[in-house]
View 1 (tube, rainbow, N blue to C red):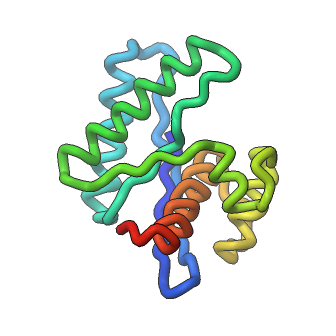
View 2: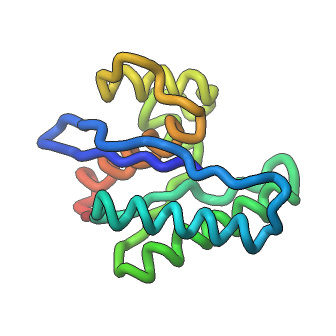
Length: 149
């Protein structure tokens, strides 16, 4: 699960933190979800975000993958609810469009633009982390135009 935290100061995004919470392939699903939840809550406790943003479910390719992503999204939503932080959802296409100007951009194009927009010296890796940063920035852009938190 990618974690991306940004601060929006006036019209400029500042990177705060990015990482991934990893699980072991050999763990059972309930243990994986617990690890993701614990990793999320640790980040919430350390960085105290005002909002959480998550990618909407995408049902395009594989039903199993969509189901697993639904579990992860549930963990994020539950984590936000437990500490009273609102959770906003964004379609992958909307995130890509907000960051690159192209709703069909590749993950690598999003990663490149995240690096540029945040003035990072290196590409944010892995791709899950750059995706998380992109979702956070998409929320920041959307929040300004729709008067959200």
